Length: 158
Image (cartoon, rainbow, N blue to C red; front, side, top):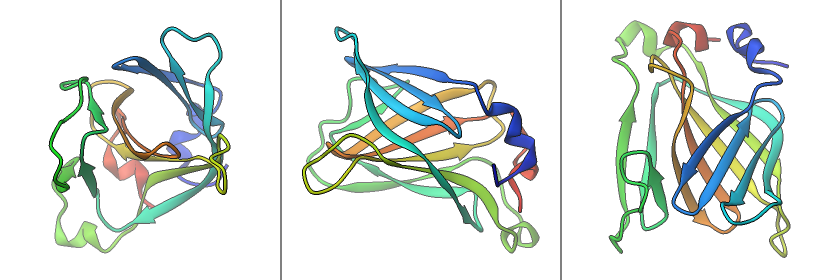
């Protein structure tokens, strides 16, 4: 495993989150799956691939009809595309020059014809507990999950 040593303990753990008719499972450094609540077998959305670093703890989340969050598990019926900033904590100018391991990429998921599924997990630090906070599916094969971590943002630095 590469990335922040502070997250090594997550290897072998899995976290579940239910949104509408689906249950998602995030197993860091292993895979991401989706299962319809009435189904037995889950679908593989992606297998652990690599880290992506950024110099900010803010990421853009596309708001659309497929957005699912704990506060709004029915989704958002707006047809127009909007973006919202999701900021996990204040970042000073000194901190902005350092990179953070805050994006986990999972690839080679379910077969989607000419491509395979991709799941991108955005880490948000300084939460109360480990939790899948939201799911955004741009298409049947591209998923974005926001995962809350009860750790200091400093532990995600390079």
